Image (tube, rainbow, N blue to C red; front, side, top):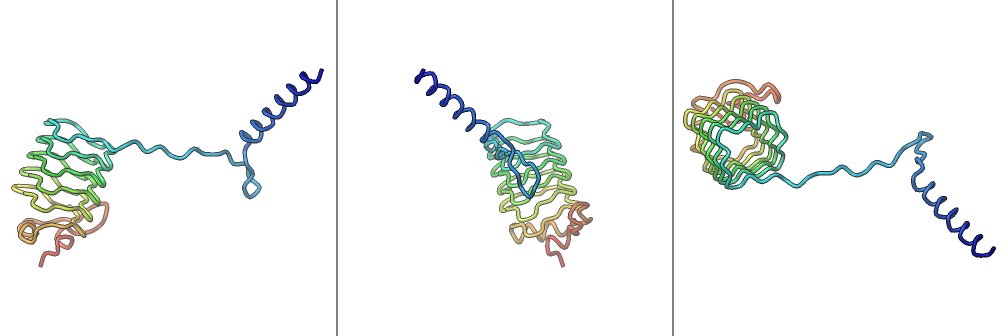
Length: 176
């Protein structure tokens, strides 16, 4: 009989522990369930990838890496690419309309004949990037790091106001 009682106590004890552990907590008189910490997957890497013509429009690609990638004719319109790295990539003819590049790294990227209209490039690194026949209407370059010669060149065609930030393209580039 002693072993039976010990086993029953063990089962009841474990059951009580599980009941307390799984029970909702009371916070300020309201029942709260434990919430698991959010899962953040590792950043996507498309380094050295052949992505010509791919459709990334509207996608969340925060902190993704597109270093040395072929992004010709790729669609990133309205994409969330905050903190993404595009170093050394070719983005000829790509569509970045309304994309959010905040705090991204776009150094040494060729944006020839690309659409960067209404893009948000706040606090983005754009050193050695090229913009030949690139539409920057309504783009916000506030706090962006770019070569002085590039800023002067972009000022020649800068127009519009970014619809999300309300900042004029010319003002964000420091045009005179």
